[in-house]
Image 1 (spheres, rainbow, N blue to C red):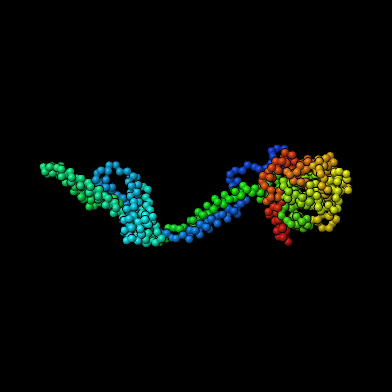
Image 2: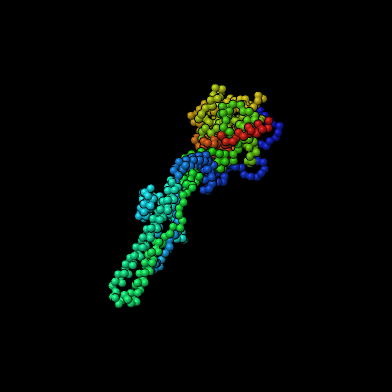
Length: 521
């Protein structure tokens, strides 16, 4: 076959080293590419970036639910009265000894919670509430490092809350006063009993006078005794509710939703390991991304690509990346493969070959998947690659077809269909005849693009890895998982494949070139 000239602009040979002296990505040797170690913060950030919508929905739903439930609750009003505690009766009687302030405060707080106080407060309220309702509505709050205790009453009625707090405080003061006076009266009774046991002479003497003075002191203390508690600030009716707090509850609900949403995102990340971005493709595989191909019905239907379409630009970018990528040897053959079926491997191989042909390269597309026949060319030349590997010459099996992505300028693409399905495809691809066939094609054409089966599924592709100049991996975003792509990268490294890079198929945002062209009109 007679070779055609390249375009007028002289470009470096495909894959020629531009002289930067840097090793090519994917070159055999070194450590295997793939899954880098992530820190906890990096993992959390990656999960959030992948599933931010789940986290946002959880935050919004829980915050809205918290606000709704909070707003639907009955408003409660809290009134507070303050009690000041003074000298204990034991100190007045001279029987207390050392006074433990903390113990005394705990005692006062415990006395405030007695049921007898609630019963007295209910009586002071003229039966407006039961003792049980009083006990459930009143709470006691101690003030640290002070002899003050706040009596707080919470009800749905502001006036009732204030009345209940004041009634409870007065009931406790009365209780303390009665208890203190009874305690002093016991001391008076005890002194009078001692005086009665004295003789007439003793009562008139110094001993009797001392007892009389003591009784008089106790009587005076009894009359002045307040129980050591004083209402220093009465409760007033509150003007704003103490609960609920829709704003505060909404913030707490949002925080809970953030935790809950991130938990759901982490579970989804564990169950669904599919790659969702181009950055993940590059980070997981360790290979550079050569091109980003958008999801397109035109590509899937093998329709004609517009010269300014995002699809056409993606494959022009792929061709340019291959020409200037910086490998240290000339590329004459490419193997296009993938980790899974259905990732667009065959479409990528076909469109890349068409793009090269449309730009003046002599290209041949070899359909090397002999497990699935080429339906498009089955009727034209049934004896394709399988026939060439058994009995036929190349000229008998090659097809010349117009390039679908260009105007009618006479440029064609040469295709070697897979041909009839043989019983032993692996043996045919491993044969010396296959190696010789690839060498002949590289002699006749500028580039040989080989469309192979998914490498991890069939052994056919493994035999082709060592027979080509370079390998291009196609990864479908949203389909292949990080585990599958990482294992695939390790497998290719073990095969010492010269992986040139990766084509991110179904890449989000890959159609932005449309906006660029439209802006320049």
